[in-house]
Length: 349
Ligand code: NAD
Ligand code: DAU
View 1 (cartoon, helix red, strand yellow):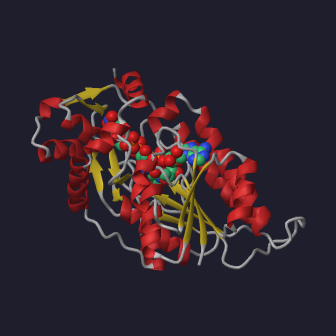
View 2: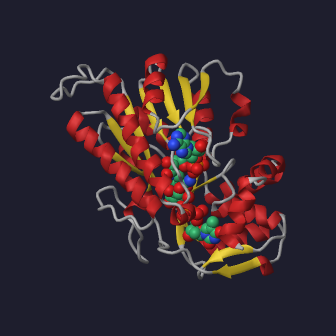
View 3: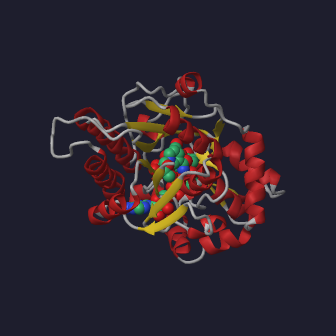
């Protein structure tokens, strides 16, 4: 039995993770803490409403009093920190919330874990923790910056983030590392490549292009469309986090990726073809400022040391994802009503 605090569990990856964990570990209790920003959606979780091992608490990870109450009342022994502002384009127009949520929010969680997990919290020299506790920080490959035509990200590379989003995630990684080194908190950091799959908010490339295609709207491709991302199905990211949670060595960083490098324009054309639309919908628009040209993950450490392997090929995953969006048009319709329209107009029109 574990009592796992999942933060940001109403978002895209967090909601997939909560459901996967309840399925894979029926004896674990999941406490999902989410502030329900524009990206948090309880509709992602309706199928587990009746699960007695699942509890939802609406709270902000920056709220110390609330985090304290949750640790005290739920006997939390594991934290998986997904909660974040996650969209690069938004970080370019409104960086501040990225810094407060992604950096300060992480620090508040670390302070709270230190208080509740350390054997003697008042002794600054004590590095002894209750058995079995772990803090897992869900980070991103974007902290490494951009690659040229060759090479891959490895865990030992320096952090060279280029956007306010990736700088805030890199800062959080460094705070997690410092709390491990100074206070001894048992931690892991995971750095995953781009995810796709069900329940992704349509501000991100793949769901945005699917939704626009379905509505015969222009498909806004930044710059020349030749930027490369390394795509991983969300369920493979979730299984990798589960693996690191159980097998990861204390203090270690693990890259997560499935060797699926694709140029943006090729993904857009694949979506157009699958949905039987015309390439005339493509509209090349002004590039994203500070746009990283290429990401690629070297996953040798997690595959060889922890035995994790992705289950999906990109070809299978993308078809299933397009089908999911076709079958869940009510979900998209609800998501794109209200704030999304204001966002879309400000960003693209
Ligand atoms: P998302 O934007 O879909 O979800 C983020 C969730 O966090 C939302 O439910 C939101 O309500 C919640 N949240 C935001 N601020 C909060 C706060 N102050 N307190 C509590 N909850 C708050 O994001 P996602 O794509 O699911 O990403 C989840 C995590 O994974 C992030 O940390 C992100 O950096 C990381 N990540 C994402 C990807 C990707 O491709 N999407 C890849 C690698 C890593
Ligand atoms: O690499 C991991 C990261 O992947 C995560 O840490 C982030 O949370 C996640 O948002 C994602 O960041 P990206 O910036 O790579 O994802 P996004 O879907 O926003 O964009 C993917 C690529 O597509 C990028 O090169 C920009 C381009 N793009 C995106 C949008 C939304 C377009 O050309 N047009 C668009 O309208």
